[in-house]
Amino acid sequence: MHAIPHDGSLVAFATLGATVAVLAAYAVSIALFGRPTATRLENEPGTVLLGRFPIEAFHWAARAVGRALERTGVSPDTLTILSLVVAALAVPFAASGRFEEAGVMLLLGSVFDALDGIVARSRGSASDAGEMLDATVDRYADALGFIGLAIFYRESPWRLSIVLLAIVGAMMVSYVRAKAEALGVALAPGIMRRPERIAYLAAGFLVGPSVSSWIAPSDPTRPATLFVVVLIGVLSNVAAFRLFAQARTALRAKRASRVVS
Image: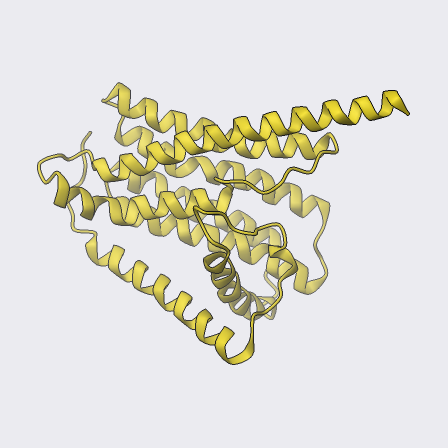
């Protein structure tokens, strides 16, 4: 692992400061004008790992940007592709040990990913084709941060295995849910959905290096960041298995009801 020595703490502090500012601004907005409604967030109730409040706050901030973009004429598909391009920049940053910049790229990519839907819905141009593009890009974007980490940890088989476990878990959560929906089964929201994975991985990138320097100053492998990846990997695979079990139970019940009728 050959990390490029640099001090990314300023990048991390600036990003965390912006995050706190968004959360505070949304709290003030609620106090003054009440909680806004957002149809898009009906299926994002939040979980113990990521509450609904931060999801609402960032969607609220993105809507303000989306209204400005709507007037520019930029297409939702362009924003979708741009989200992937920006997220892809996390790969070289993470691979070279510049974790803070990788975290920023992941967050910016997720912002553009939110903006495409906001612009499409505000124009009334949301479509199945656009949703298909968005879902496909999301799966690629999900893997990019982990790919950068896999390159960074390539010389350590057990650390690389942890990253690969997280990639599999992230993919399986999305796959099992999508397959169940295709078979006519609506699964209840659970842990480690995409917003949670992005939030946790970005936090690992942004805060992990500083925490690692405190707890293990002589360890260049960023153990705090790796711990977050372990958390994502374990919880994602547990969540995927639970979704699988719920879907199987629902499908069997559905089949039994057809046989009885």
